[in-house]
Length: 117
Length: 115
Image (cartoon, rainbow over all chains, first blue to last red; front, top):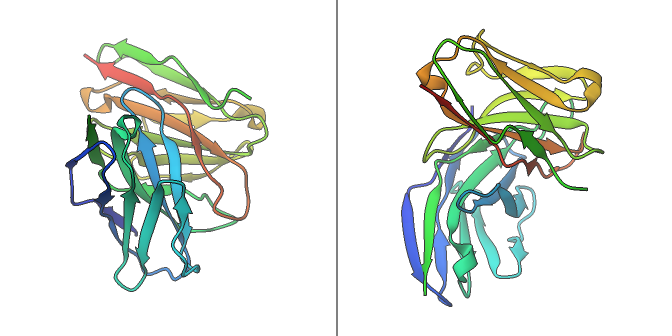
């Protein structure tokens, strides 16, 4: 079974600064996908960024980028130029690809990020 | 497309009562998932449908829980004889499959409070 650990329950950052959220995972799989989801207060969860384990290049989506260290089983999220709208719970998630079975997500416990003006 | 919708958004019930939640996925998505999220925690997988077939169930899904997806469209999750420990947010997600890291689109959730 896979496990996902987010060791930072809460973080804060000043607007326009950069923050990094940590995530580690444990799996015996060699091929898998990793995701960061954002859950704003009282709003639904949305995908921020995803990474395929077979790709060495770190994924980037505008102000969001990841540092994927496969050997260390680490998958951190960097948010540059933080904005007030980035305030949310952030969840790291693991997916084992299985075409004939469910691609269910295994989530970490989350990091609550507050962006301060 | 309006995304994944869930109904009701909030449900308060007394212990021992039965409750049913509904999820309408994105229309072209053939995969549908139910997750449970307790306060301050990450979501936990409950069950998964591909079209109308329920293909996986978590051990978290006790005998009091049942889910259906008739005709492969909307899905219902029923909890019988609710307990206070069932209080949580129940999230539904849908995706296209098979193949690829198909993004799961989440609904707003149904928050259940068992008194």
